Length: 124
Ligand code: SF4
Image (cartoon, rainbow, N blue to C red; front, side, top):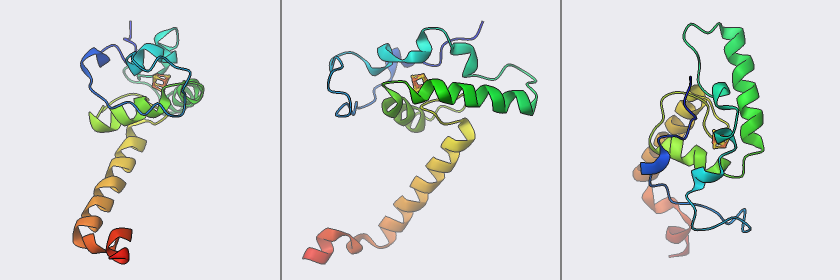
């Protein structure tokens, strides 16, 4: 049986960004509200030797679950920060997360190369 994507999150320390959902319990760990904890866990990780067409279909189904999840932002950031190497997290596949991380690294490098081009430098 596959584990829910967030079964290991008891130890994850991810800063919560909860301004988008003020009706939620601000003190509860974000993963307690994960939609995938309930019944769709099998969608989020690939079984061994999964054919490509089946993988794409499964990932799209997982993303539809993520799209209605109240903690999608927190989940995505967790998966990027860890980083989580497998599965769909926060509406992104592992390959999509690698792209996001590569973009962030490039952006950080560019900012380090030209640190004075931000709005503070322009104002000063
Ligand atoms: S965003 Fe997706 S993977 Fe993350 S907790 Fe919600 S349903 Fe699960």
